[in-house]
Amino acid sequence: MGKNKLRRFAEMKTQSCVFEPDKQLLLDDQFEMKGKWDSFFGNSNPITVELGCGKGEYTLALAKKYPGRNFVGVDVKGARIWRGSKTAEDESIPNVAFVRTKIEFINQIFAENEVSEIWLTFSDPQPKDKKGTKRLSGWAFLKRYGKLMKPESIINIKTDSQFFYDSTLETIEKGEHTLIRSKDDIYGIHWEDFHPDDQEILSVKTFYEKKWLAIGKKIKFLQFKLNDEYYKAV
Ligand SMILES: C[S@@+](CC[C@H](N)C(=O)[O-])C[C@H]1O[C@@H](n2cnc3c(N)ncnc32)[C@H](O)[C@@H]1O
Image (cartoon, rainbow, N blue to C red):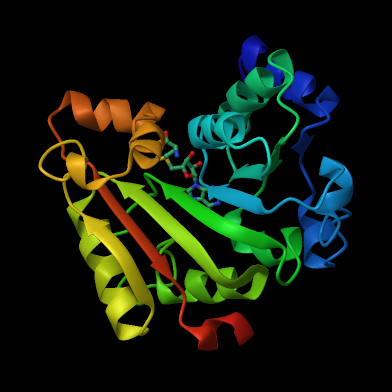
């Protein structure tokens, strides 16, 4: 591992907004923040979680726009999280945290009803995942999300992938979830359909998004609510 990476990993350990729970602790369901995120943030404001947050562009932008809410970015890659957590520390953004872990452990990170909104930003499409157990918008992950989300919470998805977009729409239909919006070219023909507040948020461009835009890909957006049955899931 390069010296820079080592230095950043060491720095992350000193950042109060970063949690790196070890695997055994999660397997034992003993993560100290589960059910106690209010105490970390010092308030009981609603929590939005960005899954596969990478460098945390959405977590940070949303936190700045909505100081009355709290935001947690989750990703397994330490070097990417470091970028987001460094900005949160440098700019003293109080309503942000990051958790370095596998999203598979999400129910060991948040308790039932602890989360009010989820964002999936440019998730890996997983086209070979025929069973839908690996895709972050597949039925298996939706069940996990249902267990930690308050009823009526919204899931937002931004993606470049036609496959991810189509397969998520299929999952929404099959699972009888409530589709709020599906736009397959947000910066093109659909831009004027969005409220200016939504345009401001959708204008945030992540590291991967910039890469896809540079090669001419169209960016898609989905919003939906889980079927009531999913809140009792797992
Ligand atoms: C294509 S990147 C997108 C990153 C960022 N959201 C962006 O738009 O630039 C997908 C991210 O999801 C993370 N990821 C994928 N599967 C994961 C999993 N099972 N658990 C935790 N992180 C995961 C990867 O580490 C990576 O940072």
